Length: 291
Image (tube, rainbow, N blue to C red; front, side):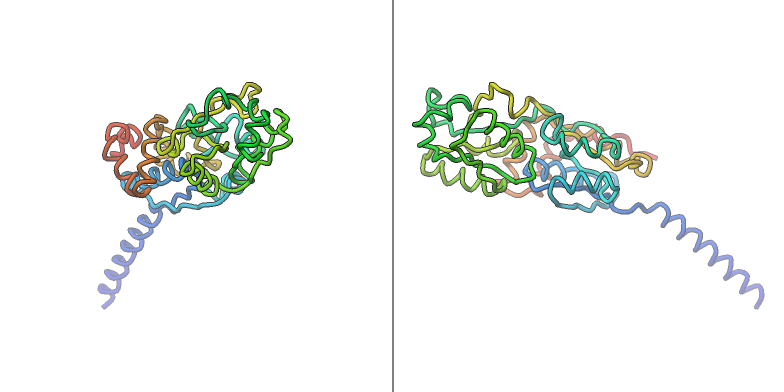
C-alpha cells in the first residue's frame, strides 16, 4: 500500500511539474490596439493572423480612438499599436508618451496627409489650397471642407490650415472617416464639387479619381512614416512577436491595393489574399522560427 502511495505521489509530482512548465510556457494574448482607419485595420489584422498562424500566439484586438491608444500602450494596458503617424500627424500624442514606449520599427513609409478634390474639378479652378479663397470656388464648395474624427492628427492640422490660409468663410465639418467617405461618394455620383481631408495610403484612391491640392504653406506636413509602438519591456517579454513586428514592412502601393481589395470583399479575405500573393515578404517578416 505504501509503495502504491509513493508511486502515485511521484506520478502526481511529475504531472504537476509538467503542467506547471506548460503553463509557464503559455503566453497571454498579444494585445494590439487600433483605431478604425482603413490602413490601420488592414495592417493590424494582417499582423494578428500571422502572429497566430505562424508564431502560434493568440492575439486580442483592442479598437479605440487614437488618444486612448497612446495612453494604453504607455501604461502597458495595450502591448502594441501599429499606427503611429510621425513626425507631424501624431506629434502631440507621441510627445506625451515617448519615454514610456518603445519604437519597434516602421511599417510603411511615404504616408501623407492632404486635402483632395475630385479629378473632374478643373485644375485651373482649384490646384492649391490658396484657390479655395476664390469667390466662385467658395460658392461651388458651399464653404465646406469635409473632415474626419475630432481626435485625429489630420483634423488638428486641417484646423491649422484653415487659419494659415485665412479660410474664414469655410467650416471644417468634423465627422468620421465613414462620414467623410459617404459624403465623397454621394458628391461623386452627382458630379458635385467637394474638398475633403484625406491621407495616403487609402483605398479611396483606388475607387475614385482624386487629386491632392498643393499646400504651399506646408500646413498639413510632409511625408510621414507609420511606426509600430510597444509598451516598455515588450521586447523582453515577447521577443518573437517583437522581432516579427520590427521586420514587418509593406510597400505603400501593395498596401493601397490590399485596402481596396478589403473594401470590395472583406478585410479577412484581403488579408488571406495578401499572404498568398506575398510569400517571400511574409517569410522575411516571420524569420527563422526553429527552436
